[in-house]
Image 1: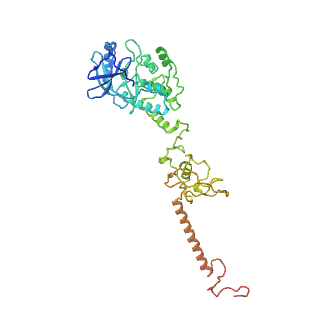
Image 2: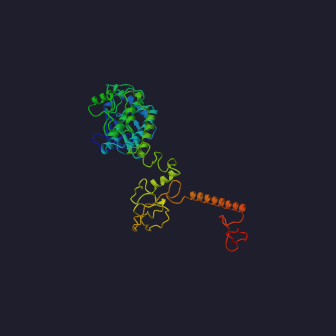
Image 3: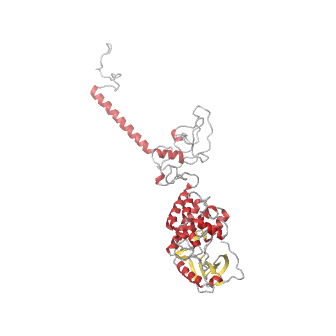
Length: 444
């Protein structure tokens, strides 16, 4: 927030607070940066002299300051002190460091959808606390939202009214900022929490496009568009456009509640933060190779054959940091690229010493080893991709032993039934052969 030096006509002390700088001026008065005796910094607003002489204004202002004291929540600037009986009434709120949403968008341009949704979700939670205290802000707009290091904060409850109060002043003019006022405020109807939902929708549309959804013009033109024309949401991300259009409905009954708005914006922020808004198809963001949960979660870890594919396609990397092309032979399969040497030094368990040259498949000359591949990570089942699988080796060993035993038993049974033989169906021969051999061609 920009600070300016105090002017000659500005007070130096208000109540127990010493004033240091000007923070800005609005329709109700001037806002100063002040501090108390303990050094706590506050934003202190002093009401304009002409409003201070209005008894009706003082009465309403007193009721709203009393209601604002009941607001609890981390998304609002806490009310610290107020003096409603002073010649010029004033109130002080907690000072929030950081630029306003208006200044940030004005300097940096439209914000990404994920950031807009995250800010909107926090603001909706803050409004929920405001509405639970029986207060409607009535002037929510980009300049009344500060982006502090701890999250967005809603400020300037100077014209907030209790739920159900009229929106007109004694001269019949609507209080608020054209382009962010709800239609019922312009008509002078009763304000409700839905009034702030409309203003929040217009504010988030501004954050997404760096422009008001009702364009520009004089106050009369802007107020007419708010009541009679549809908002222009060209440039608003597709993920946010339907929700913001619902917030800007002319009828308060057609707008989502503050709680519904907060929950929906949380969902959008989470999805956009995982990359859905950066070119991926729905359900397939960065770290989601199968359209499921991100890497590292149990839901995303494939097993069996899928684990092998996972290891080949998503774990091993080439020297340049790119994954092997789909359909290419994996080093652990014992095959080498056509016309070249097999990869070395990657720890794939191919049975060759790291750094040793391997002749080409078609008998070509030996080649110098290329740069070593990047370190291979383990697959979700805990083994190195392409390396021997202990479980598979145990299974094969068990099958081999069982088959060997069965063959041996079969041979033994055959020998017991047919008499002594060499197991091949021919008479035994050689030294030590029994003398009971059959006669062949007259020879014994």
